[in-house]
Image 1 (cartoon, rainbow, N blue to C red):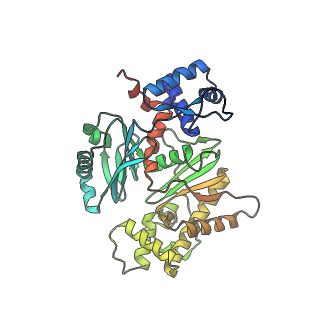
Image 2: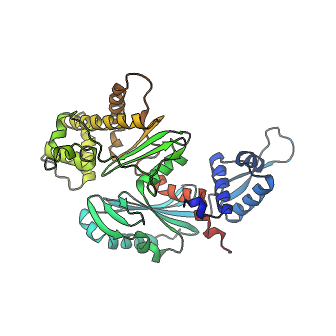
Image 3: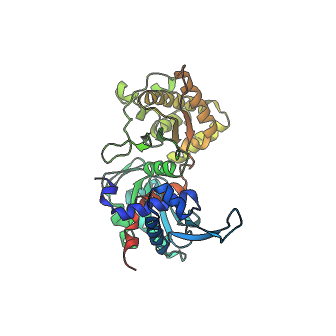
Length: 402
């Protein structure tokens, strides 16, 4: 059963009207009726509800012909509801309080060291308590949204962050004593996908591939305007695709694995693989975290250092080959790439697109581009909240009698 089957139709209609108003910034009720297909009386009723819930507001705009009384337009209300978003990555826990239109009110980053991962629950509780105790601006909270740069099970429990595995850490239960509003838990990749699909560079695109390349490889497909998914998963597992011998560095990675497994893409281009190359080719580096090592590599790429360029060449060789195969399966107008390696986006994307083009001697090939939102953007963390309003699920609480 999908969300729309669970959510009352009235809330779904409210969400759709809110999304249209947000998309057009200022729009009249007559225009809403034409765009949505709802009768004028229905539009009047829906917009009245949204105004009463402080989600939209009326705004006087001048008529272009300067005749008659000023027109009344509708726009999103930025001044009542607040959203609280948190992003959990292997090296930090970042909390952002913002207005519903994305204007940041307060933001705090809590560094997360490797030795704290074994007591992650205590670290998260201490962090949220500290933030809430020192935040006087908090009011009219619509939800608390947590996005995780790791792996969740189907029930939303954290099972992996970086290289650390967990025994189904229930984040919703962990945070629920501190909030009387809905708590949303989602994987970072899914929220990034939502942000790009609903607000970002894929908003007018019907066919696109989404790939996130960091500690894991996350992949999803937008086909004819719909995200392809397998039951409850919005991503497709491509970890076991095999890359042929394209680069001399491939043989240096994961030598303890059987040869076929060693050349799987998950063992060639994820952070785990790239870190192996950094440690092997830069034996004197003393960085303690993977994030620091990736930044070190990117700095050397910018400086055109030969060893760093060899690693980049390895990465783009393997990734271009995999993307070539995926484009033979799924048609796409563009390929959206998300990765911490986008610190060197100009050289990375140029080299990747050049190699991808060589695989397609005839016809136009989809271009690899970065998304509108960088991989650590707070807007990505807020995408789950926007989606909850659009599909009506977050409006349930707002429908309760005041």
